[in-house]
Length: 282
Ligand SMILES: C[S@@+](CC[C@H](N)C(=O)[O-])C[C@H]1O[C@@H](n2cnc3c(N)ncnc32)[C@H](O)[C@@H]1O
Image 1 (cartoon, rainbow, N blue to C red):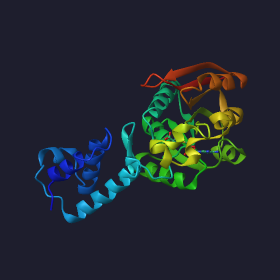
Image 2: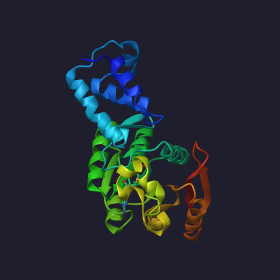
Image 3: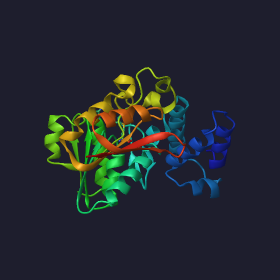
Image 4: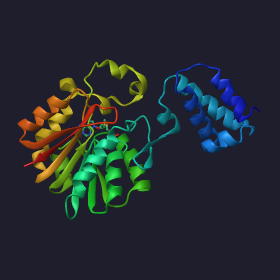
C-alpha cells in the first residue's frame, strides 16, 4: 500500500500540464473522501486498495481529458456547490457576474419579484437568485429533461420553495403559460458559440452538451429568440440580463435596441472581457 505522499510524488513525476498537481490532489481527496488539510498534514496516511482503485480510475479519465467537475460530479458556484453531470454545462465563474448584476437590479425594486432563468442547466443562476432573498420567486426554464433533473436535485438541496422549474423552449407558448404572469427580470446564459468555432474542440467544451454551447446565426440564434419573445412576459420597467461571447457586445446591443430596449449596458468579467449585457424594458 502506498502513502499519500508516495501517490502524489508518483503523479508529480508525470508532466501533464500546469494544473495536473491540483487535479491530482482533488482526485485523491475524492478517492479518500478527505479534505486538503489531510493531504498536507498526514502524508504518511496509507491509501487503501479501494481508494487507490478509485483514484486510478479517476486519473485515467482525467488523462483522457474529461473535465474534473464531471469526474468528481460537483462544481463550486457563488456560495454553494452544485452537482453536475455531462448533461449540464459546468458553471463558470463569469456567470457570477450575471448573478451579481441581477441581484443589484432586483435589490433596487420593492416587493415580491418574479424572475426567470432561461436555460437553467444545473440551476446555478436560478438557485443563486432564489437563495438571495425570499422576495424573489424564481422559475428556471430548460429544454433538456436530463439537465432539468440535475437542476431539480440541486434545488432540493440548496433552495427553498420560492424556486420551481418548467421544461420547454425559451419563451414559447407553453413556457409562457407555465410562467403564469408577468415577470420583473429575465436572466439567461444561453448557448452563444458559433457552430464550428475552434473552441468547441478544446478542453472541457469537448465533453459538454452541444445544446448548452452553440447555436446558429453565429451563436446569436438563442439571444435573438429570447429578445424577440420577451415582450410576452416581461413587465414594462423590467430587466433582461444576458451573458454572451466576449466579441458579441455590439451585436447583442443592436438586437436589444431593435427590440425597443433602453439603458443597454455591457459589463466586463474579471478577465476584462465584455460578458454580460443588461437592458431595461420600456
Ligand atoms: C450555456 S448553458 C447555461 C447553463 C446554466 N444556466 C449556467 O449558467 O451554468 C445553456 C443552457 O440552455 C439550455 N438550452 C438550450 N436551448 C434551449 C432552449 N431552446 N430552451 C431552453 N433551454 C435551452 C441548454 O440545455 C443549457 O442548459
